[in-house]
Length: 290
Image (cartoon, rainbow, N blue to C red; front, side):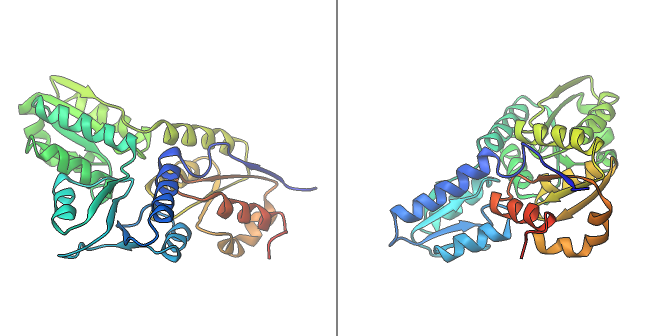
């Protein structure tokens, strides 16, 4: 029997990533003589970063003391301090922060200004979260980051004393993580204000993948291991059916037996995974790969 292979509708680039990649390419094409660099990786995808590098759009991880040309702020955003540093180094700033990330930053600022003890639900070392926290810290020192209840517990007395607690969420977080933390905070707060800032693309991608997983022998999640939304997808699906997380079609060789034994295979992909990477995975499963 031929295998049944399904591709999720909400797989691959979200609008924020698509906007960032298309805009930075256009910027270079329109300014071929200007130096254009991105602070950090524009998106979490090796193939895209290599493509940009070939176009002359370099990823830099440390700001030079003196620079020239254009420095792009990636979709994850940056702190106000970093924006100043880019300008002081002599670059023109080109801000490609995702609009959904901007909304989280603004919600965090408003809660901090209104004297809420701010809890940012997310990964502390993720660049998006670092920028959200930095924006909030301009207005209040009562800001913590957590993606487990255990990480909040050391601050429980301070949160209880403060009474007013505000919550924002990293755009690519899992709704289950938010729900667990909100349930815990409810026991501490007299007033709890929650801004569910998980982006719509992430919510739809997760919901659709869950439904596919319920009727699949195997789920294949395609995307960078550094991508938060992609790793969260794999985490969610592993509890429902057999799931593998790969970056490219080459990794499928490690799972030949599992693929052979699976009749219904569904494929989804993270928000920073290009279509051509997904297509190569499907071709290889179909036996049409190189």
